[in-house]
Image 1 (cartoon, one colour):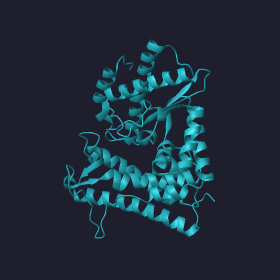
Image 2: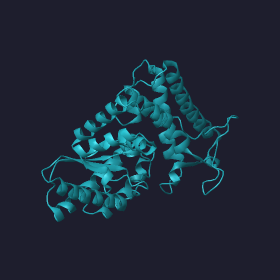
Image 3: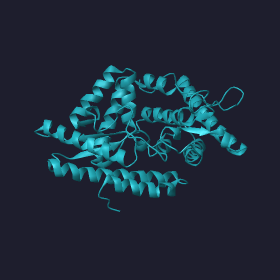
Image 4: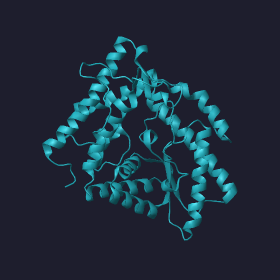
Length: 330
């Protein structure tokens, strides 16, 4: 398919999306295909207005897209890195234009704008390679909640179009900076802050008010704690890959046996597929919630086991840190 407009991409997306509801991996390949089509259309539009790009660049995705873990619905989390030029001001203007065009195109293709403005249309997320290093250094020096959050957002990135090496370079720089400035305790505290999904009596802890009352927040109780725990261990062991499943594979066996790795991988895949099959797919926000009243006893038991595995992972991480007496950056 070679669509000529964002609207054509949206029609193709809507036509094919449900074909992948039973396969998390095929779904995410499809998302990549759709987003790359949008980038190509955006490039043609910007080149028509402003000419060819002034420098090589990478358009990268973050969040669930960066980790290759999108559901049926997804919002936008992305940025741009470009090479230094003799006329850097012109390059900045060009790539911000491109970032804005991509953001608009993704929205028209069915991807909600990021509520936190983590998009290539924002100068914070559209910079040259040197500017990105300076930005990372600034975040590391500040080491406040927002700066740590931004570092973690970037760590979950991967290049979707352009120069892949730019992303790898910056991610390696982030890891080195985190270790040299001893920020792992800050990240650990961030990782251990999560919403519990099971009560002391083994009951599912559902939302008690609002439009999702009676539903389970799958994102905050299960997906985020799992992703964040594995990401912490990946940072601790200088692993720059973004996918949670790949991170598990690359963790040293002194942390997890082969059996444990396989258990965590299978439960995480179950979680992703559970979200696809039983989540609320009416819109992006709703897709984070699970209506447990519609689940059979068997499926309720399955989701409880997934949540218990997530809690076990977080508990194992805490025990590891307590046993070793350090965070691995000393």
